[in-house]
Length: 185
Image (cartoon, rainbow, N blue to C red; front, side):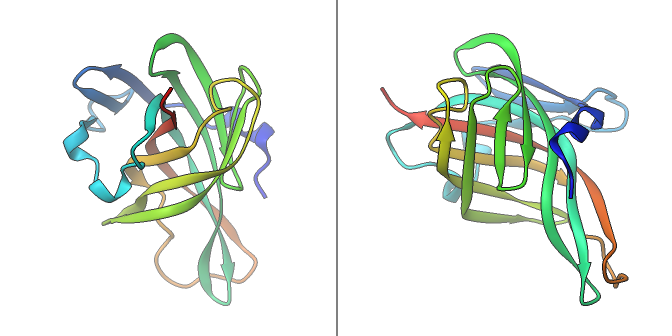
C-alpha cells in the first residue's frame, strides 16, 4: 500500500501552463520529453463533461501506478502521484496528492474529491485517458465543488508485460494532465 506521506518523495517533473490556446505539459528536461499541448480539439469527445460543467482547475501530475501480482498477472492497485497547478481563474500555484479511491486532496486547503470512471479512452502504450464523475467532495477549496475530472495526455503507467510472482508489487512511473470541472454558475 502506498501512503500519502510517501508522495513527498515523488518528484514533480511537470510544468503546467494554462493559456488561451490550451494546456502545456512537459518534462523539466526538454531533451528527454516533448511537450504535449491540449487544445479543445485534442480532447477525445467522449471525455467531455456534460453541458453545465466548466473547467475550474488544471494540474500536471507525476507519480506511479501501483500494480500487485495476483495469480501470475499484474493487477492495478492504486495511483500515487503529486500534482501541481492552478485554478482556471489563475492565482497561486497549488499542490494536490492523488491516491487510492481514486481521490485527489489539496495539500493547500484540505479540499478533496473522490470519483469513479465514467468513460475510458485507450491510449496505446500508456494508461488510458479518462473522464471521471465525482462521487464525493469535501471542503470549499479548489476541489470542493468538483463534478468531473479528466485525465489527459497520459504517458507511461501501463502494467508491466509478462508474468510475475504472486504477492509482489511494483510502481510504474506516469505523467498526465488532470482537469477538474465544477458546475457553471
